[in-house]
Length: 237
Image (cartoon, rainbow, N blue to C red; front, side, top):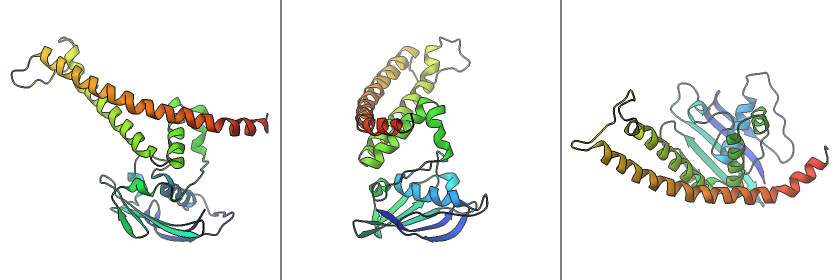
């Protein structure tokens, strides 16, 4: 597999750029701030639908533009595939594979596979455990794209559960908090608490199910990586 051509429009600092590539080593040369990392980021976005530098898609769109386009020609086993992604901050991104629209952008995952090492990766060692979990999840999706939906489901359930806890917090303050609980007309605090607890139980169960599946996948991935990591560590220790 290799990336034969990369094209960007209104991506980061680029109004437009066409980058032909060949199998083997490619070196990008230029002054600081000229956009070398932006091109690497664009290729990584095609592979993972995420940036290694920012958590949201907004900064990927050039200032003043409404959307950005990243297009990649990928050669695998002698066959070429064209992936096109339109990044639209605040709305659903759009994707095409070989000029055919896809209902879900994540359906392009697996077309291009990349391995990225950047200064930000030092957080894997120096940062919080969340960084290591994110790295494993990224690798899971690259290895088996079907895990993208499980990961998305887990993140959505976690956000909903946390939002419920924040909104229901005043119900347990017994009048000592600064914010009064929001109640429906005729609803008592006790009834609101019972309803919140029932809803919380639903989210807890769903979070446990998808979280258990994700944990299983991470452990299986670590099992497969262990002999490779042991061999790599033996060469430096």
